Every structure is written in C-alpha cells, then in structure tokens.
Image (cartoon, rainbow, N blue to C red):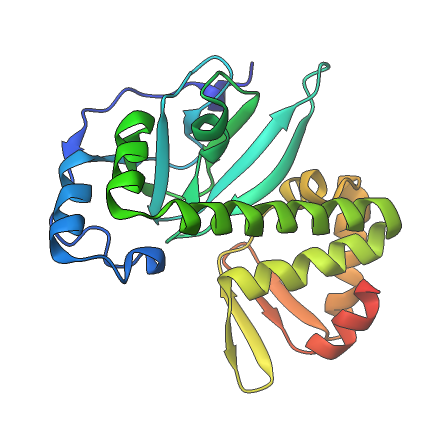
Amino acid sequence: MSKIYQRETKRLEKCESNSFKNFPFFDELKKDDIEYLNSIAFNRKYSKKQIIYSPVISTGSIYFCKKGRIKISILSKDGREKIISLVNPGEIFGETFFLENKKGNEIACTIDECEVYEIDNNEFREFLGKTNLYHWFAYLIKNKINSYLENIEDLSFKDASQRVAAFLLRYSNSFGKKIGSQTFTKSFLGHLEIAQITACSRQTVSSFLEQIRTEGIIHFDRNKLVINDQNYLQKLAG
C-alpha cells in the first residue's frame, strides 16, 4: 500500500467551546446541546496527504472537517485509486461506518493540512437521539446519495471532456467564490487527482485543461482555479 496511507498517531485533545460554530447544520441547537457535543468531540490535526482512516486503519467514529480538504477514495483489487467524493470545511464524513457499523473499503486522505473533529459513533447516536436530529441526519445522507448519483450519471452518459468540464463546475461551486463574472477557487487539484475523480487518463485531463485555458475559459495553477466563462463551460459539460 502507498506510503501516503500510513497515519501518524496524534494525541486527541478536547474541542474548544466554539468549535462547531462553522457547521451550519448545528445552527439551531441550544447552548446545552452544543456544550454536550463539545464534551464528546475530540480534535485531530493532519498534515498534507495523511490518512485519516482506511480498510487497514479501522474507525468507530464519525468526522467533521473544520479546516482543509479531504478526498474519499476506494481502491480496486489491482490497487488503482478512485476518488468518490471531496469533503469541504463544515462537512461530515465517515457516515458509511456510522450506518453500517463495520469495516468498509473507503480511504479518507487529506489534500491539505486539515483540522478534523472526531466523535465516537455510539456517542453520536446518543447525541442524535437526545437532540431529535435523526431527521436532519437522514436528509444529509439523502443529499450525499444524490451527489453520488450525479457522479454515476456523468460517468455513464458523458464523454471524457464533458466529465472534466462537469467536475470543474462542481468543484468551483463547492470551493469557489463568485466575483463579478468570474469564479475564483483557492487551491486546485493535480491532474492525476482529477483523472481519478472523472475516470479519465491523466493525459486526457491535461490536454483538455490546457485547451480551455488557451481559449480563455479558465485559468489555473496549483494554487487556484479561475473560471472566466461559466456559461460556456456549462455547454461543454453537456
């Protein structure tokens, strides 16, 4: 298994009292409920390209991304990696283990330096019951399933260029900020990572990105993505 899938063990620290203020789905909680959530949550900090969990690093927890980006992947039998989702700050991940309560085949690996809050699955179930938030959690899972279905639809019905264009739009919508007619996204993924998400070859991704950069539709480097013409990119996505 790749070296990046080795996790450095770090000491857990209790979360600060205001730690969950940037997670929108906890906005309506009472002060006592927030304090209870803080009492069962722990903090981890991860360096870039560090594993949070994998099939050989089991987990009995659910996770909250406070800072940075995380990729969720699965490995094929021949060792190829397929990225199935990206996690933004303010989002939950690891819900597969929460629902099935058994070892899965997912790998959660940091893209940037990350700060993550971790809560034991059993304690989080107790929290959901205590606060009557199971309906919210079901809604969250429904949205994630819809996102996976959109990705499957892209893979099934779009050609390589359309898949990459559709990914750029989703990525900018998730991470970017619209300023005038442009959308700016701080930090960008490598061509190999985009290829793993879109089921394309790295060469195809590089060729398409360079083509639309030459045409002025986008601008990018390792530190940013700028979409200059979102309408035209939408047409390319099909």
